[in-house]
Image 1 (cartoon, helix red, strand yellow):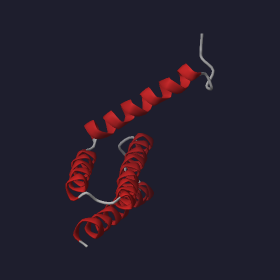
Image 2 (cartoon, helix red, strand yellow; image 1 turned 90 degrees about the vertical axis):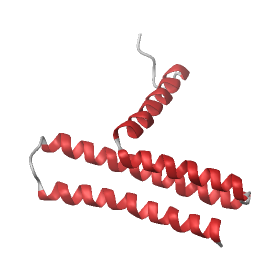
Image 3 (tube, rainbow, N blue to C red; image 1 turned 90 degrees about the horizontal axis):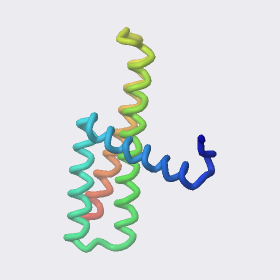
Length: 120
């Protein structure tokens, strides 16, 4: 019997899918592994420096934004590759470049936030 989407077990199952997605992201994307290292370093430095509650809030927000951008960029790239089936499409290159730009923008914002928090 198929569970209805609002059933508690169906909701719990959706969390399992999301956790597997995080695992796939980290396993398949080298940049995600770099983000994981940067995340751990930022959290460790935050603990070491005893940053304030509001600094933690800012740090968590920028970490989440970078991870979201990386996950969405990966999805865009995978969908484009699936759609193109190995063929070159100039518009797909633009789409993938713009999706990658979202990651760079969020990572630069996170880096600036980290510099402000940890060095000023």
